[in-house]
Image (cartoon, rainbow, N blue to C red; front, side, top):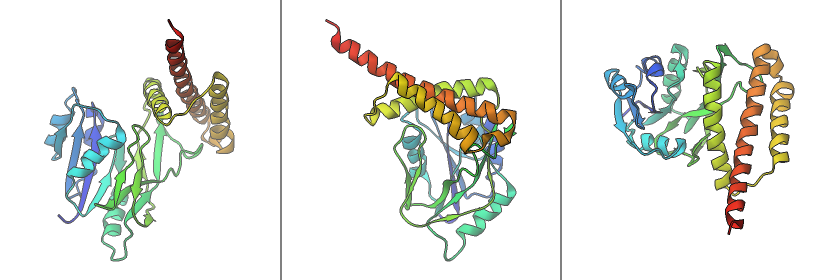
Length: 257
């Protein structure tokens, strides 16, 4: 099947889906793998022309995206998240890039993310290049349960127009994702055999703030740049704190009679 297959995974993304899918009208097919949505995401995606497969068991972001990838039939694949948006300029650039006779096997593109309503261009958040366009059969997602990446067998070129990321819409959204991502991050560290201490958790949290706000010049994003640096520090703190508490619980269980 010629053209580009768009793939995405969802769970209760009805509030994002319309804006996301409407920017994919240029794709040969749109594939959605849903994991138990209860908000009408499945029905909306189908209404907007997507092929939807429901998988009730959640296996993590990387494995779930590989499930979507396995359903694609296009010569090229474009991976997108429900809270991301393709501008007309980016859509045109992708279409031109994949038609080139000398096209590499994959392309990275810059991602511009918002935080509580403001697009952030500093603090390590931009250009935040991510590989999202690749030849089918030349790449797969890592098996990481969170913060997965595309593993490419071949050369990677660069696109220049931004992929818009409408993330962290409100403080409630920040807190909810902080809890979820810190738990998944702690699980990922534990699976790799990492160990930590309370002092290490504190040190990594402080370093995360310094790196985001000062070294990566997050202060140039104004007051929300400070808020973002605090949020990253807190997520780091909770990730390592959860790992430490899990280790402590295992030790206590071994010592109990």
